[in-house]
Image 1 (cartoon, one colour):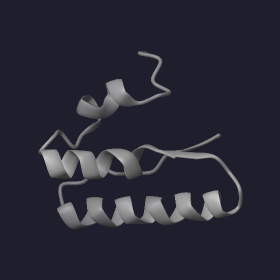
Image 2 (cartoon, rainbow, N blue to C red):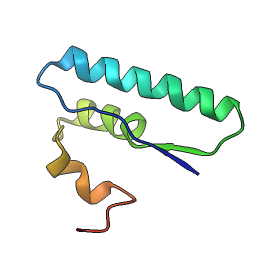
Image 3 (cartoon, rainbow, N blue to C red):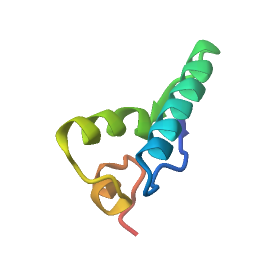
Image 4 (cartoon, rainbow, N blue to C red):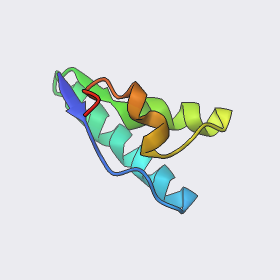
Amino acid sequence: MIYLACPYSHPLEGVREARFRAANVVAANLMAEGHVVYSAISMSHPIAVENNLGLDWDFWRPNDVYDDGV
C-alpha cells in the first residue's frame, strides 16, 4: 500500500483546494498503475469542507492511520 502524503494546510482556501485536487490526480495515476493507495487528503478534505470541521493537523492527527501518537 502506498500512503500518499502531501502538503495541505494553508491560510488560502484556493491553495488547499489545489493541493486536494493534485493529490487526487496523483492517487488516480498510481491506482491506474495497479497500486493500492490511501490518500488522506482525498478523503478528509471533502469531509472537512462540507461539515465545517477543522482543517489543521491538530484536528486530523487522530485520524491519521500511521500516527503512532509520538
